[in-house]
Image (cartoon, rainbow, N blue to C red; front, side, top):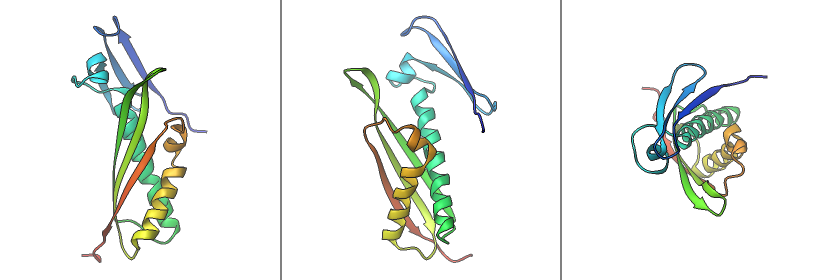
Length: 148
């Protein structure tokens, strides 16, 4: 089984402190803070990294599902918007919006929507985030031009 790793270090009090997030692969390291997480301050935050993971996972899942159906995509672009809100339990990821646009030849809009919904349901990150009350998907099929 594959194991992926990341680490975080935090120094100081919650609102005045700061931290660093590091991916185990070494391809990303960045600062985070209370303002970058709960306001609009500079730096990254765990929710932004969740959004990147979800967008990447969904795009790969959609590519795999399209390929199994004989529709290899030319391009898939996905954005994930993670909403951080307040609940009785405290700060909570309340919603995730996936927006994807795919360029796929010879595929109808209804079939594309069905396959995109399947990718949303089966993507590893979607399943890991099953506790999020609302994960939506907006899928747009772009007509692929024949090889240029």
